[in-house]
Image 1 (cartoon, one colour):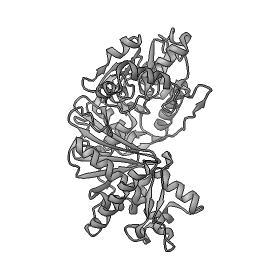
Image 2 (tube, one colour; image 1 turned 180 degrees about the vertical axis):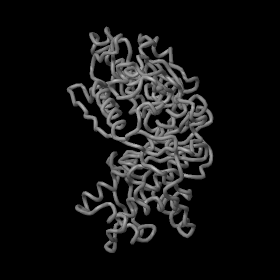
Image 3 (tube, one colour; image 1 turned 30 degrees about the horizontal axis):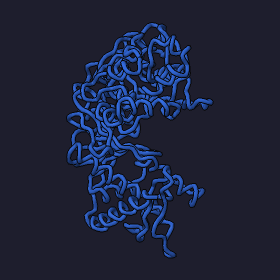
Image 4 (cartoon, rainbow, N blue to C red; image 1 turned 135 degrees about the vertical axis):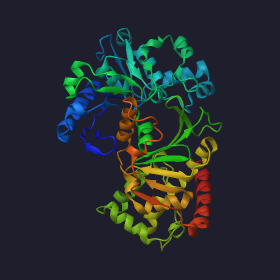
Length: 461
């Protein structure tokens, strides 16, 4: 995407990436990352009609928890191991034995061990011929930065997805490398997001149709970029309401949740981010549509939900479909189609309320939710979330908050912006605002309590 300094999209180009399912696990072709990046950037430039000489800076919003080994010339030695890959279970178990899970959690801010460091250790143990040639183990952001500038660098948010990053001191954990006999310099240099990395190489500039004068600026992991593009700041929680959901809030200091429910991620070294995820949110509504309302559009489902009364006639829905613990509870003969749709939306809202309360334990009171993603296209759903949580809900100007967040970082690195958390000129005015309906407060508070009790009951099975 190409943006101007007011955050307006001037052009965009989109290509999907494929996954490679191998006998070992789930992989990706890192060369495809580079080919598609070059194609997308050059297409954006051509479509925009903008003189390439006017383009000042470039930054990246990247998937995390994936890595690719490269040699000293930056050439790929093995397919990238995807964040969906689970081949390193033995290495994870061994790490927990060596370091202790609680110590890992306290250092990294993570509540599980399914990250990039165990994947690299798997390569060393299971593919020694690849490991012997490996000069760097790069995540997607690092790999693209390397191709653009010839420098291996990453940011704190990407590093947070490795299980090798000390979230308190914003550095690699040397103890882990020493014990696993992995050189620390296999990882990229650490730079805060929004830092200028360097200019494009002549080859990269030619491949992307850009002048070599363009400044390459350190980007971030996609959910961090999305939160920036949505306008996250102290007192504001962002929610990515797509197939799954990510709930994010800012922390003034690295904070490890004593209850182990919220993860802590690096940001720019001045702020940190608390994050929780929900596996099936938009996916739950899609399941309902495909199963019970085949052929109907989401707009038609929204209309059905609008016709049902708050509380969905007493019907509760747990959207835990990815865990085999979801379902409707309280179905009656008089239950309507609208009740079912509304119950799904309310069920997701109840889970959001629970997550928001956990965030508030760590990051302080929340005055506003910024919600983006496909689910934010539903006004009735956003109003339900506002009513259930008691928070003002803002729908940002654009859904493309991850790309916008990267543009904000690019502007910061180019000296066009001083504070990534106050980029109102680029995030723009909200497209919609929803405020809680106090008449529904008691009803939803009681329904929320029942949903928590039901979830606790189901978890026992």
